Length: 207
Image (cartoon, rainbow, N blue to C red; front, side):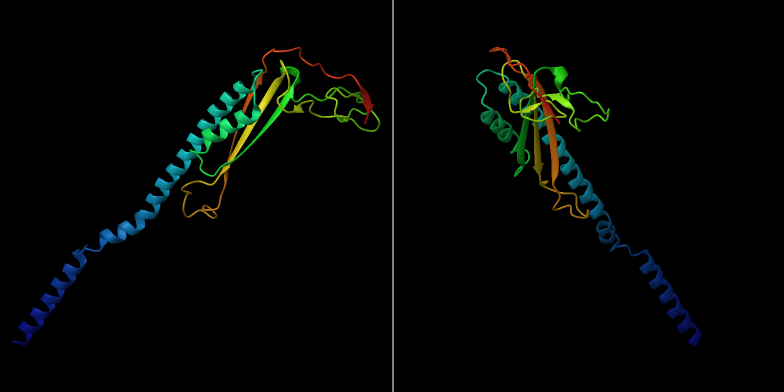
């Protein structure tokens, strides 16, 4: 009799352990807890990169349009800058938009140094070396370009930067919710020949 009772208890315990081992009612919750962070990072990352890619595309288009408008005789740079801002802001809410314009006499002058006699062959105008003040600003420049939209027939490099905070930043990344992303776009256009082009100056000076 005692042996039957012990056997019955052992059998009941074995059945209970087998049932516990086969019980997976909490597995789904555990798996969800493990997977959801990775899933959210993937979704937020796609949104973040999508906003950046779309913002860059919109910025490029707006800059090209604004540069074309600025090349006209009736150009208003304030209006064209506002065009870029109005186009980009809906895609990049709260973005800080800044722009610069650098003008040259011709395409070949872009990033060209002012003419000078490099006596010591160090690539800089110094030690009293004579130079030609081609842009008329009173000193030698390693880039002959002048700030502004220039005049008729001038070549203008129009550059715009847009600094914004992502709508949804990638989570679990240090500083993700405070980071700023900066997008840049440039366009090179030649102003219409609506008047005689002003040539470079010929006044000489020394460094």
